[in-house]
Length: 264
Length: 288
Image 1 (cartoon, rainbow over the protein chains, first blue to last red):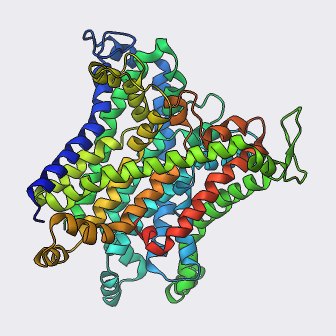
Image 2 (image 1 turned 135 degrees about the vertical axis):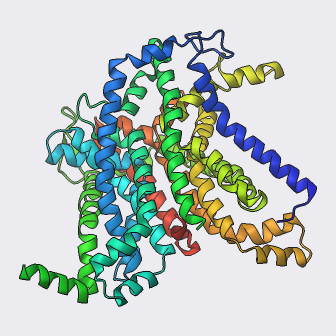
Image 3 (image 1 turned 90 degrees about the vertical axis):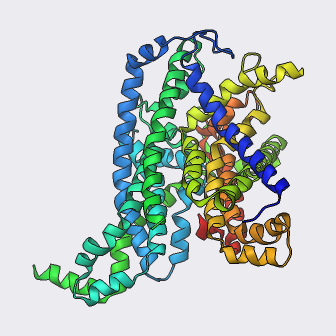
């Protein structure tokens, strides 16, 4: 689109401001993880890698990471199955109550996490008696379903059903059509949904706070518990810096996957 | 064997049976587990508690709602929470609209994927990490913000409502950028060309053509920024100092007086319902 000179300058300024807003805080965390000063006063006073070695040998952190990994893995698996099934139904069929159901699939992320959290906590403690690691998984799966559903449903909407019809006209039954035609077309959306849902679960704190059993410390819970302890500050900062660097990789992959098919 | 064949035939002929098969498990999960829990929670809000044991007593009372709606303090918390949610949504839109516009319409097509990845990727960093980053930014006396504005004679505003608004804006910005970008990318070039052929300058084209067409996408983004801000309590604990929002009130009452916490939790849910209901006509829900 053609733009006047002033409009172009204004837009570029806004872009620059936006990038600064996005990148400055995260960059500071990464720089601070090498800051010699324990109170992290800005500007840094010297360079050290000792916080990283200290964090790497921290039992609490390692334990929390493996627990978060376990929870995210199973929550994502449940979400993959249920979210894809629902997306297929909503996108390919017209039936009574369809609009209500698609609204229902927005609720777990549209309603505040604390509401979901205390609602699940109330039911779990009353019916299951106690909270465990599996109650975290159930809690996470509830909003992970929505993420997978959104991704897969969006892909379904863009695919026309003519290819499925062609396949069935050529004699394939529904299962063969799904295996050979529909699934390959959906695959990258399913993978992107799975990556997003894994990342969300790995990161979730509010629902986790209310569904985690005693001692079931996930990584976000560990960070939150240690955030206000001054002597843990360097380790928390290293964990934060590491998470920034690590979180960029899977999300970047999911971006690549969605792009590969959207520019088709 | 014959039953599986019969089941297959039924699925083949009857689309209702197919929908039921597909939806049975997901609906069971969301309706029984999720909606069921929500319903159970809100039923609790009309019950009492034993003041000595903090246990819920199943006796009908409207006292919790009377307390919530007559106590000025809770009214003020609701107003403050709404104010924060509205500010966050407006600032997100203010930052996201020009960025999305630049990425979708101004930048050369080959740079677009790179730009969108540059904007979105860091914003998917961990929730706590982002808030932690702003905690180090706003730290009174030794934080980056303080260092930045000290030469100008100012000092960091420290922790409070301002830090909460900035922190929440930072958290939910990608939820605003993505739908707007998608909406602007879909605009056909011919519409924009027509506008400039008819003599409109870029500003006029933006406000009369682009903004109205992408409005549903902006509203879709606002669903997230608004609702996520309204229910937050962790950010408020980390960046808010003594400042409190509805989520904090729910959190504090949760273990001692669950019926009252449920009554307070109903406020953001009702506000969200009204909000979702009022935007249904804009078609924003399809942009989510």
